[in-house]
Image 1 (cartoon, rainbow, N blue to C red):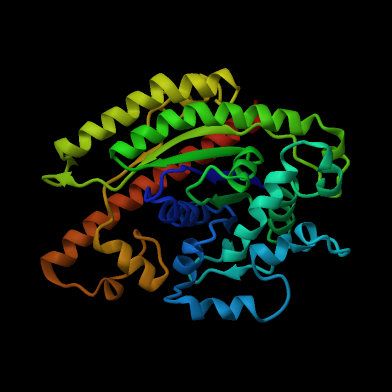
Image 2: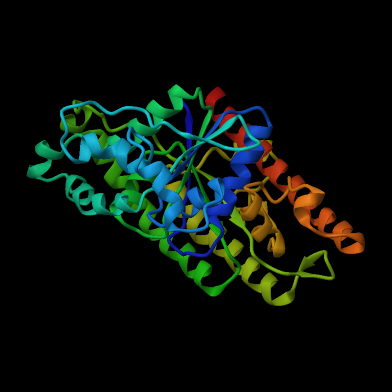
Length: 352
């Protein structure tokens, strides 16, 4: 079974998609086989990975027939087709043979209400018993086809049934944050929402109708890997400016005083020794980095992570080029450290 890691925060604009792409690429560069799953109806990850510039570009993977995107993959379950689910025929990723993409589809939003009804655990569930386990089944089926070690799930910024399902059927989760007031609020909100989701998942796991389904609801207990704090500006190239540092401190305080205790209370934390094994106190950011600035536009243009752009792709010369390459090197080091931490944490849990 591939290890499934969800990137989740119901606050938007926190770099979930860029983190999924860059972190996935670095895990792949570490020799791990990675499957990216675009579960946001806005399909930003698909656009970034494949270099799409407009809606028209998506038609090539939507209209060629076969199971080419997440909606096609889920259709047998959600549209009550007699045929069983098939693995998605994933898109290869230029420059990184160890990574594949399950493209997103705006139509996945159409399944939100139906899944919500199925997850009510009501008397009507018998006719919808295959839905709660279908997303996890599709990902694992596809991961098996591509012998993936990790499935990185990019989620939309919402508290809807699809996100509830995606997070609670993942093995681990990361919470991307931006240093602002709304991320502080989101931390408080998650401390309330996630224990409720965990209670729902435990009920679902104990429901025989879901365990006997064609696509059984998985018996997993998602664990918190840490936060990812990004999108702040540096002061004199070294530390966050005071305005950003204020929010970073408040986020960290909220995570340690509210989110971590809430997660501990519902068994969504790894043992303290696991975090200590990578030199990280519980609640400290797993990854913290400044804004990518102009690198993000070039990354999207060339379908390459911010740390792997070539001199030609940077389109710069002289001191500007040297300064940009220094930033790239710094970002590469931070993503490498984060990838190593994730590998260490997931392998620690596997051993224990």
